[in-house]
Length: 308
Ligand code: ATP
Image (tube, rainbow, N blue to C red; front, side):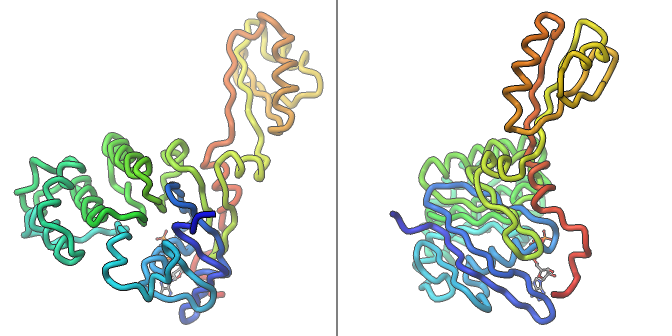
């Protein structure tokens, strides 16, 4: 088996008066895009800092491409790209000069900067000062910075915050290209629905513990959340509901109703609905969304600053 691109084994991170991570373990194979989810204060940024080698675990081990990130030489770090949650650049520098500054730090050829700026859609704005950039442009400049050095691993902390839907789509197109090129991506976000079709696996942190880990389908199964079957009917919905033997149905409008059942009962319910024939004029199957799964596993009601 190949070495995981990212691995954490029994990681505990204790800050004074606060345990940010409490025994977290997982391994991410190369070329996979993982969504890191969790409430405010769940430990996402702490986990990123550990993977970057910016801080060390109190207990347990962290491995990036098989190495301890806190002990690798600068050259090794070229393989890791990072986009922090709040990207701050020097306002008076142009986009191009900003990227060149980071390129020097990363030992990257300066000639690559224009290619990267074009890749994130900033070719025309490259000569403008960063202070004239919109939030979306700054975010894209941050992504270009993270892409310096051909990273095999990309850590992106809430990268789409503040981007409008079109820019988000554009951003995910670039992420998709990187993944297709073999990069491993760990991406934290609060915007859950946009991750559904774009990530292979999800990790849900709750109060510093890994509450769930797996593909969305696996998490849906584990959560065993109900499926909703929405019917539009030619007859009165109340009459139709009575003909659905043993199924829980909620009336939505005089001509529509919703059958709520477990994932395991979905096919039996669909067979019963099919037997109703032409009375059913439309049917919509609503699977639990990533939002539903997240609320199930990641919900944290207490104050996030409760010390442990
Ligand atoms: P958010 O979604 O709000 O960015 P997060 O999931 O990234 O949150 P972290 O920033 O990792 O959460 O913080 C986890 C917990 O550790 C929080 O309770 C935070 O207050 C605490 N914490 C983080 N850094 C430190 C530090 N340097 N010293 C003490 N406590 C800290």
